[in-house]
Image (cartoon, rainbow, N blue to C red; front, side, top):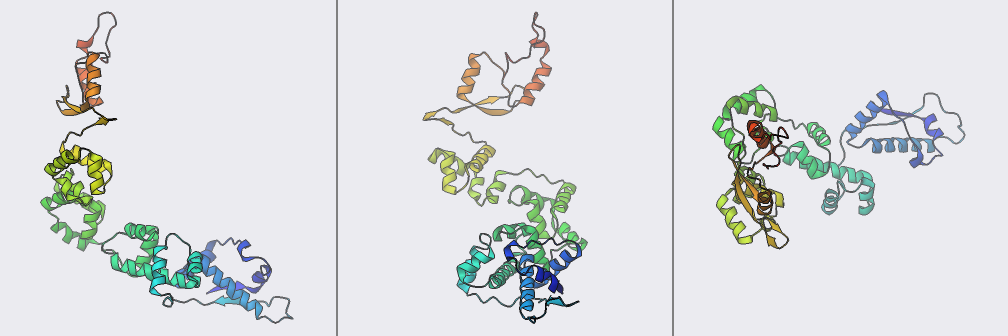
Length: 350
């Protein structure tokens, strides 16, 4: 039970409420936070109600009394739960829509109700949302959906008694169910992450990673993995992507038809090994396939860039800087020039 002395309230009676600043620290702050949690309200609203209770007690004080009575205290009892919200379903829908955009007093002014009614409605909305989705969604996902921090959602979930499955027993059962073939398929083809697999099996993300390492699972993601993760499984079919690119002509057109960012569709095309048309203004430039002189791998280069290198007399081509460095170390003796010493190789390679 929080106690506020009459003498303290008398000293601040004539001041405006919005100009009153309090510096609360230590055990008193912990007591206020604990009582606010029991009331299921914010600390600011809790203090506001406590001060109003003290002011009402001052108004009921006898007029002839000027000195504070020694030991006299104004108390505010705590309640364990809020009463059901008096708002209608339509008003609750408005609160749910603006729960993360507007503050409680603003919503109360718009709905012409009390702030406490808005708080009660918000608590009902948050609790019903958490109860319905806590098994399918993480605290972070629920927080982003409601507009709150994941720590706040985690605290509310634990207050409701909804605890995540943890422990050795569930881990052993899940470990036995996760075979190498099944885990490798989920990580490379089905669009599931370590965190998602762990949540479905009652394990942490780190534990799933350890299981994958122990089983020797290959985690190289295929195009179908990204396609399923983005909810567009047709992108996992190379033939479909080639037909769509031939019909629409541009990656941006395919991305617009699928309601995806341009970069995602471009990434899928490159993973399939599909050569993308490059446009500069209205003139089609095109690409040319080249073999790296060091690793003999295929890579793409613009025709305009290749023509410029050819005019300079450059005959060697490399897919990356590392290949160029390795090739230069191997053929450094061949690039010596009699008068200038060691050549850098930049005049003859690219």
